[in-house]
Image (cartoon, rainbow, N blue to C red; front, top):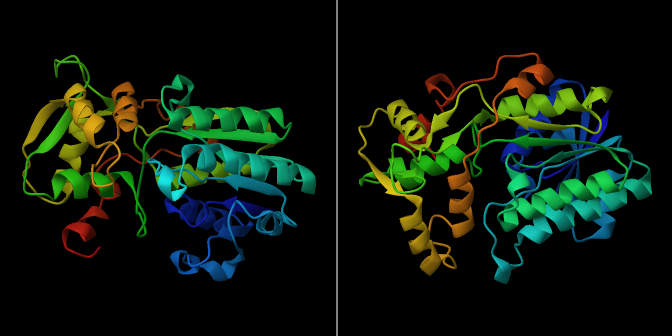
Length: 312
């Protein structure tokens, strides 16, 4: 099958491209000008240089394809630079879905996010609007909603790498976020899922017609608190780290003052989603891939040692 991938040079996208090639599929990638060198193995893919705002580039990347995978997503908006949730999560999907219909491509896989039903933030609302639009277009769609994704970042932004750089590596105590005002009752939980398991799920969905019209929540095999994840990352690099309990409400007050500043590590919306948690379990992942999901343990977090040794 020839598959067009929008967002194929990103963290998750690069792993999905690998999984598709290993399964015998070919890929067509839309690449921003100047980003050609960000993707390893481009010789196995057809590249179209351009962006989502150029109709000619969109048509070119979709031409001759049997299916489309849309992966574009951002965690933080910078409206002054034209980087918005509306453009990345919803507007891009509209343009690609409309072009797919025009070119007669029926199969459409969309990466959304676990917890978007809450629609409490622009991130969640635009992701959910994109789901609705794909369904409304009458495409043979499947939506995949991963929890927080971890794994070898390949030089891109990734959840564990960011936690390491922001909280584990600095010579100061880390912050153990919790909801409300009591750490014992405000435990924040997540189901971290390995990027390779997510990639395998996309391939399995693509190859299984029974998944058309379905939505799958993809989580890992463990439910962990914020502090437990920090402790495991710390253990991998052999450090001792004091974790100070921090109510999200206090951090949100600071974010209210510095939400606009790129240097501030989190936004109010990110804290809102963190407070909601991100738990969904691994049952859908196991059914789709027929494999045991990778856990959030040392053998699957080994890439952090490269960062700790100064390798990245």
